[in-house]
Image (cartoon, rainbow, N blue to C red):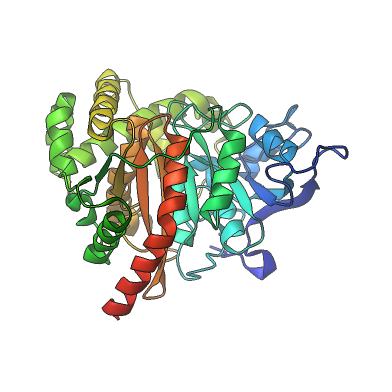
Length: 436
């Protein structure tokens, strides 16, 4: 499989410029910024490729442009091109056998993460100021963590997905990447359909040790960095170390049906989160099948390793227990709302360790995927917002952490990350120095 390089790191499918109208008002919120767009957003007159040459060949040009892309341009930003993505958005790894794999700027021998791989790489390589991606099961959060940058998955339904090819609509979100929290927040202010809120302090900070024990490395250091940073800014009284796995097991009664089914093949380490992940993946497969079964069966596309198996699995999905999965989602949302309330935050690892090495066999990635989805499914199934915050490099590999907040608390979460980031960076630097 080709790993793309050259001076654009293989991030782009196509380069062009879409500029704001010539007589735009001065001092626009994104004025002077450049951005790139994942090949899943419609741009009028252009064929949206969906990561697949065969998809592009069998679809005509878009007749209108995604309102999210238009909003960024109308706010003063210049779109400079379309980025590479995993085929049909069905991977969190970032490897594409047709377009090549964008090169991870901070770890060239590791995957860039997917499916918004090119969008993350374009930001990490400083080719653009920010970029747009989509996140269904983790496709912004994972590449942000793999490439050592900020990535934001908004609350489900807050940002328009009109003129974006659907993967699984009840999970699909439009997210974005930036190298700093200020730019990330500026983009959010443009894209949210929400009034801007005044900055508020968190009322509760949950740092569940069981989730950090899922990490392959550096387990203790990341939770220590979080604890020190939160204590320094907000005091220790609001910090809680609730065991998230136990909390969810007690608060989501419908999980019982899946706990026994998933515990036999337990690779995530937390049975209740494995069951949440199982439910999420079932629902996503069902929705993907409804969206794309006809095209796949008609065209029979040549799909890459891993993706072919996932698409086949989705097409063989049945409706058995789907209502049970929906009940789990409803119960989890209520449980997470009760845990965090209006201005609480949950801190968890974004991914369960360093980005995997390039070109691993799909079977070798299964334990990583299982642990990753057990963490990623928390926001996906609760419809909460989540931000990936980079903590720098440790042993020459990127390290990051995530914060989650309730549905609709997107401004709160972005403002909190912006306030917290200098302290997190300081504490991370101290921890890495002491660890060396």
